[in-house]
Image (cartoon, helix red, strand yellow):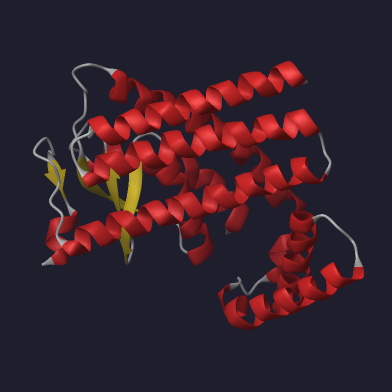
Length: 161
Length: 107
């Protein structure tokens, strides 16, 4: 079942990307989608039913707006630090405890963290996410976990879990 | 529509410029990647949005929109891979760094 869904997704993506409905294009798309399913199908989440629950899409849209806002803030923040003559940076690597369980949700969270204020996810070992932070504002694990991941975790939990 | 697209493209170029300034000014690999991923990704996304507004929802516009999605995923994954690779390779954090939790795991 999940292979069929993944096939439809990849074919749709291909058609959007090439944006033509000629027969040659569709044939190439089908072959490419089949290869994708063969090689990467096992990485796709098992529970396809989740794709049909509308509230997940609602939260995805809410999350998108939150994410774009955070992303804009991130950019002004980094631009400010870069252009300031004294360069107010205090970099370091901190560890953040994750409450998310599934791989897909964690990937999404790590990607979101990389795009937001001064943080890049370095590595994930068990339940801990190591994050490089351009301005370590506190040394208390509770506080910075909330600052780095807390904003997104509740939305991602609603979308993917 | 044309005005909006020109404004968006101008903002994009400005942010790309900030990213490049950051690439030169910041002290170590990790901080440089911060500016390289964030400013440059937003700058490029802004330029692509400008393209979308300029052409509307025909093939070029839709492709620009999809490129934004792909860029968001690939840029973050690339940044993560570069940071992890640099750390594994033994690149030290800059002098200004205050904390390194990752060190204890690497031992």
